[in-house]
Structures are given as C-alpha cells and as structure tokens.
Amino acid sequence: MFCPKCGKELKDGSKFCKYCGTKIKPKKTAVSNNNNAVKTTDDNEKTKKIIIGILIAVIVILSIVFIGFSTNLFNGNNNGNGNILNQAPSSSAESAPQSSISLNSFPVSEAPALAQAIKNSGGNFPVQFGSLSLTKPQCLYILTKSIYEIGNGNPSATISVGNPSYAAHPSGSDRSQSIAQSNYIDMSRRFSAWIESHGSVPNYIGIYNSGVPDVSPSRMLDISVDILIQYKNTNSLPSSINI
Image 1 (tube, helix red, strand yellow):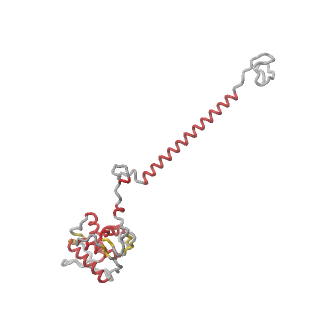
Image 2: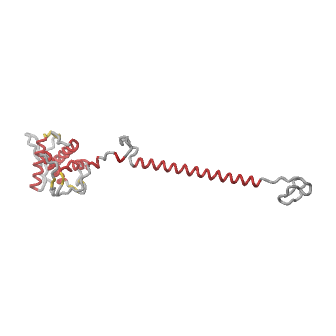
Image 3: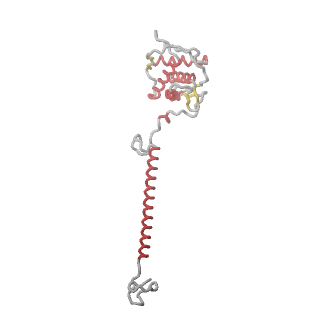
C-alpha cells in the first residue's frame, strides 16, 4: 500500500504514514464487494425457491383437475352430494348379465337385458352377452320363449337354448300394424314351440287376424326386442305392440 499524501510505500495495514504522519484510512472496497456478492447469492436462492414453489403448486392443481375430470368429480350429475361412491350405478352396470348364465340354463329374467344388447348392437350377430356369443336363431328363441313365460306368470323360469338354425326360406309381409298382448304372447308361444320341435326358426309366424299378413322372422325379432325393453322399463308387458 502507498501513502495517499506523500506516495511512499507503506506496510499493509499501516494506520499512519511513517514518512509524513498522514492518517491512513482502511480500504472497504473488497469487503463491500464481498457483501454485495453474498447479498446477490441470497437473492438468487430466494428467487429459485419461489420459482420451485410456484411450479409445485401448479403441478398439484393440475393433478387435482385431472383426477376430478377422470372420476367425474366435476360432473353435474353427482346429485350435489360430492361423493362419487354414493352415486347410482350406470345403466350399463344395471343391465350387466349374471355370471352364471349359460345356454343350458338361461334365466328369463335376463331376456330384457339381452333385448337391450340386441338393440344396441344394431342387429349385428352374433351378440356378445356376458360369456355367451349368441346367434340370431338363439336370440329369437330366448326372446320369444321368455315373452311366453312372462305372459304366463313365470318370470323366474330358465331356458335351455340349444343351437337352432335360421329359417330355410324366411318370408312374411312386414306391414305396419298393432298386435294385442294376448296375440303376441301366443305368437311367441308358437314361434318358440316350433324351434323346440324342429330345431330351426319358422319361415314365418301368423297373427291370426283376418286379412293381416304373416310376420317374417326378422320382424318377429324386432317385435320381441321392443316388448322386452318395455317390460324392462315398466316391469309389465305392454298391452299391445306396434310394428
């Protein structure tokens, strides 16, 4: 270091110039710079912590939103109770077939759900129902036999389905008309009885009304589906069915 007045070289840390007696003031530049460096480092650490905290908060919020939408937490159909576990099961769960159904013992009580499955399939066969893959003839037999059993007060009956073939020469006119309950129950009896006796779907089914054309197997399927879906929704067979 040097004396600021006379310029003589002095020992570092000298308080007075030994040549001219001038008081030497200590330099603070290095300390000040060091303090500024420490302060800058502290500010940077605080900034990093703030940014990290914001990122964590954003991630938590996004996670809550994602979970809410994926579990229908924000769905307006939760009846306002805010508890998903208390919500009613969906219609698909209500119509799920019993795990115990089989071709040897098909419950009549499952026929309405099968009718809905056929409706949902758009008429494409085979129809997957539980563990069963059902052909059109099998579905025709199950539905017509079930309508007959329900109409005779046996909704808890079971059916041995078998593997009938489709009609060899399906025919019949499908003109619009109304069929009374007693008539379509009898049609279902005759249709399913024919399958039981011959191992195949009949070519047509008569309505027994004078001047009314016979019904084709495909239209009989449509009739049976509509009857059993109405039965599923009202727990009673309709008084008549329009085709």
